[in-house]
Image (cartoon, rainbow, N blue to C red; front, side, top):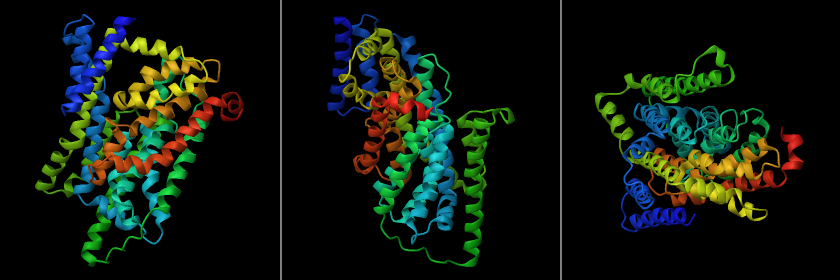
Length: 421
């Protein structure tokens, strides 16, 4: 046990030192993993390093595909055209509903908040700009709606990971997940509407330009609604169509707008997709996969699990803060596997569906916790800002509401179970 503690301390120390030296986070994570393997006596386990790097491959491909779809909407002018048609500066509540509903639905049907932000976020950013939201608040609203959609049924990936870890089917979660996600989405809608400023209405423009704008807007709306409809079909009526994977659906959806781009527009799409925030997050996810693999190899992951399961009430409720904190490195999906499963077992005397629903909501808070903060970083990317803390501050009231509902669901589990099953 002492050896594992020292391995864990070494890995944390190396990560802190690389941070102080201002090395890129992916390098710090990989150096931390290598240091842990060395002190545990495994040398430099190349097989595990390579294998761990593929741990988040599906999510990495989904992020690049989502960025591709969003940039095609932006560079073709479809996102701005949709915003001009749908945004109403005088009725900000309607504008925020128009921006938020596609984000929430995409999060519901993919189960991954980052994909929702990239897919519907570009269009939402244009609408929110016209509704009068400052960039930080617009990014916070986009990240929140994508994350809350991820928590909602039918495809909450963190909850699915936990259900698989405790050997139970992912069924019967709809009511409890909606009880967590829908009130917070309404709270965010009303809160951000209240803080929106009055935006100046767009000018009428000439008839030719209006015709072109209508065409671009129509094509963009068809692309977004087509993707959402297809995902709804394969989630609710899987016998009608097969699932070709999220990345392929997004790439096909983006191809529909490529003919509206010039050669320069094509190169700009490629530059935006494979550089900056998407590339950095892909590198971070690769490094996180390596770190998780080495933690499993050295026994650190098992040590964390055993200690989590040993917590007793009321200390276990304080220990729940470890979900978003550790999720800041492991991501919401990774921490659901590493900590969510043992926490679910720690509450095994209660209704497990409500346990996993609440724990998945707490794990989702890591979408706003640096250094990964995937939804936050991607929302900043689609809005066009590089400052995360103003976005996180704007999201705190809704996140506090979500955390409170999740903890109450765990505390009042025996009382709520008959009503939320």
